[in-house]
Length: 252
Image (cartoon, rainbow, N blue to C red; front, side, top):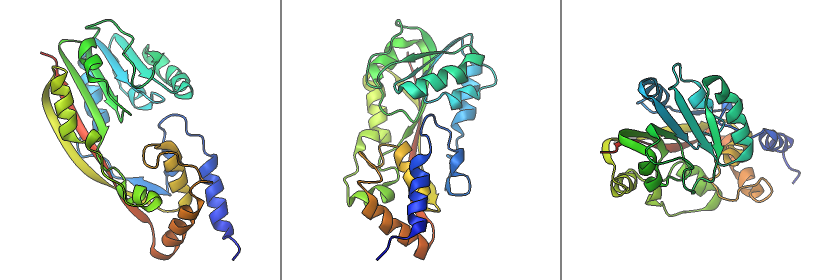
């Protein structure tokens, strides 16, 4: 049977969009994700306004950090992927932010007790002893994490049943923070509805959010993408649920 030309067109669209940075505006009208009730960007900005020196770990393209209305006198960020690091340098230059390219699982290239505030939104991994090391006594770590089993429905549609790793769970985050010597002051979890209106949006999402389907490519997963396209065509938008964790911890 000839392949649906609409399927091929949508695949090509989703596969062509640049994936640098964390700007998700391309999804407008094609996919939606519910926002956590707590409002990470607002809470982070409030803490930045009170800080004298702050660090954003794994800043992506710096888009979230660039939105703060009042930057601290000293502002730094890390990012591992060169295209994102370049984008972050451009986005954070107006705030006086310094961006350092460093691997996600490496040590932080800053002296001990450099920052009163360390933040991160959706980090790939966190090296907790390093966070504790660069925090000043009385300093705060504030982050929104991707929780365990995030978008599991989409992962399992593409890959079949998968075990849910607790590496990203809230209890694991608490344990690792406390092992590093930090006192957890706030810990919250929320499941968020994610709706994909077409297969092009799914392709772009899987290219951008790499941990959902590790090793994803259109060529490798074309049969599963076709099945999902047909399901969306017959049943309507595909719904998954993102998991988010908010954590705030302080260094004694």
